[in-house]
Length: 187
Image (cartoon, rainbow, N blue to C red; front, side, top):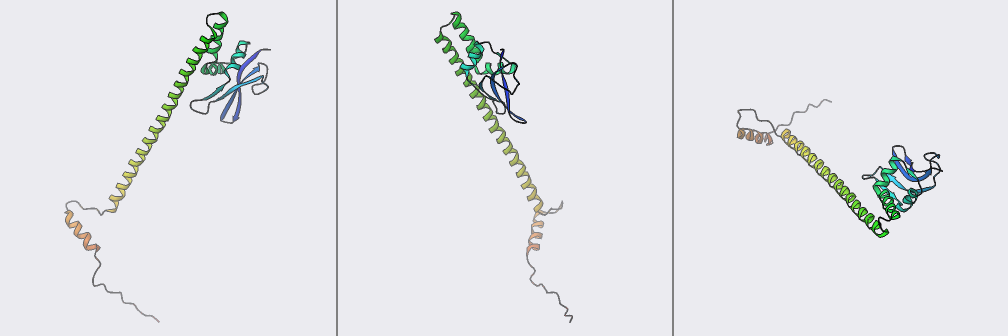
């Protein structure tokens, strides 16, 4: 029975979510599988990948063939590296402790790289938010300046500013002798 390590699609339309499974090559894509090895969520940035490394290595040692996408995922999480190191242990090139030490060093380095990427994404998001707030503030300041300019009366060219101030003050004072309009009583 040929075994494949492949992705099994779950999730709703437009939001895929995958299980990484070991399945018979003749089974349907989303059908029967032998063992669930992990999950892969491409909707997050960076993509979320959780794998059972030891089970994946066991299936690779038993002859399971990963698909291209599954192979990339297994490589990203270090499953193929561990499989390679265990092959060296079988041949006598390494001891089990040396292989485990190399694998753990690689995992630590990989986690640091992922943390740097997440930190860079957070920093870029914060910078984008700050730039958007700055642009919005500039637009609001411009609107406020335009509103203030529209509220002031315009000065004709050549007229002195002091004359305009006097005219505004004279217009603003209430008239002292205002006469009430005569009312006609029609009965």
